[in-house]
Length: 306
Image 1 (cartoon, rainbow, N blue to C red):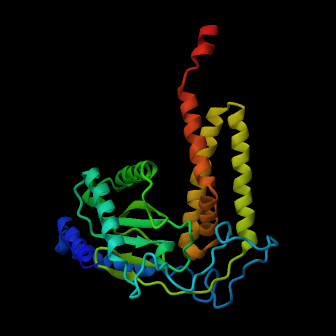
Image 2: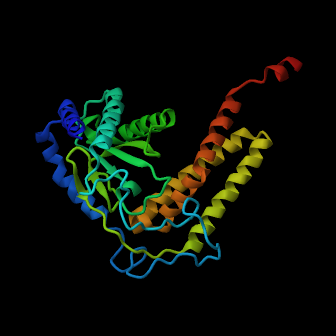
Image 3: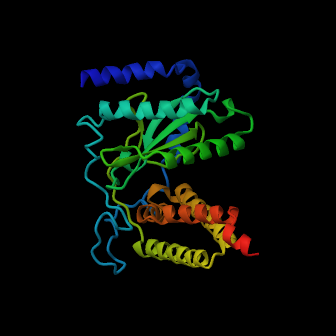
């Protein structure tokens, strides 16, 4: 453990982050985190003092891995967190190395302000399918004045990296994201891997949510995907490409709206997680990619017959 801790510290030095530069932004960033993590008003949906409203939709008993509404755990995932609620040093080393390797390949002129772990694995609503959401925090404007262009570039880089890598830590996949320092972040658990401390420490909390509402939206998306699959079989590839692109954007905006108004336990965010865990998001990406490839291909046999 001592050797791993020393390696952890040496990695931080290697990253050559300027603490003076970081200090300029961290106060503003932490303030933004504190504001955005509050979600809805106290004692209003989705946060209430009532017991969780689970199992009211008539679905009957569901295995945790397929449940639409996640269960709040009594504890953090102890494969990741030590008894002192600090991240285990061997895992911190791996996550820092992964973040460093990813960021170096971007070759952009912006200091790393922080590297954080957030999402379900930094909270009490983790499941066996939860990802390790690693966020590299930078100032987008230090890359280019056109922040929107920087955002699109980094989103594409993130997508390509996550698509080409499947790094697993204790059965959980690592997902990389480059976050702007002033970007609203809707999470009740944020841990700084660089500082080895919580920026926002989560608390186990009961919440009330309509499972019927989640099931209804989930089924609606499933039906839309089935319709797109029928179009794929009919070789209507342009329609497939356009429909999947619009559906993905709709789901993305739907989730963002929920995060902004209700936080991570909003119906919209829980629908998104159900779609991800159920494989629907991956299926949409596959349909879109296959449709594009077919659109851009020429059927040599058909062309010769002509």
